[in-house]
Amino acid sequence: MSQILDAPGHRPPLRRRVAARTAVAAARLLARLPPRRIRAVLSLVRRGAAPASYDQALAARRDVTATSTRCAGRYCLPRSLAAALLCRMRGTWPTWCTGVRTPPFAAHAWIEADGRPVGEPADTATYRSLIRIPPAAPRG
Image 1 (cartoon, rainbow, N blue to C red):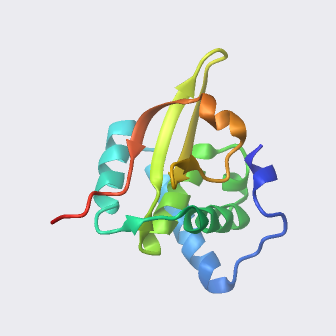
Image 2: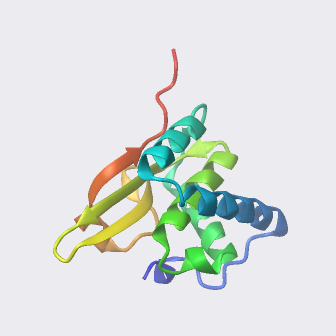
Image 3: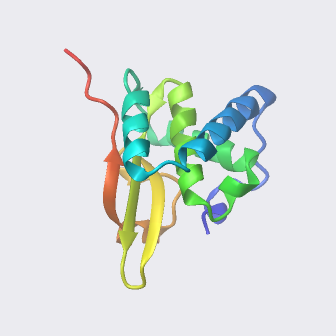
């Protein structure tokens, strides 16, 4: 369903594809970890990053889905992780979220920026967020 919301035929330039592939590879490894470890890693990685704007987060998500067939499909966890990591590689951080809904039971992972889900269908609002990793508060 998320494929519909991504730009069809989008093909980023080589430099952005390499960065997206790197983020996808890291996300695939990270997705194998238990939720508490994912939270710990993302909390560490987000440090020092500025909050991502909606457009920055959407560009990262589109680069990830254009680069990875798996992320362009139904695999929301690696897609959301890769998009968040790609934002971080670019110096920003979206809010990474995972949640559930009932009935029927379903789990989902996504990123948010400017207070709204990035590139997700409208039914994402039906999910109750269980884990949220927002941009880190600036030190000062």
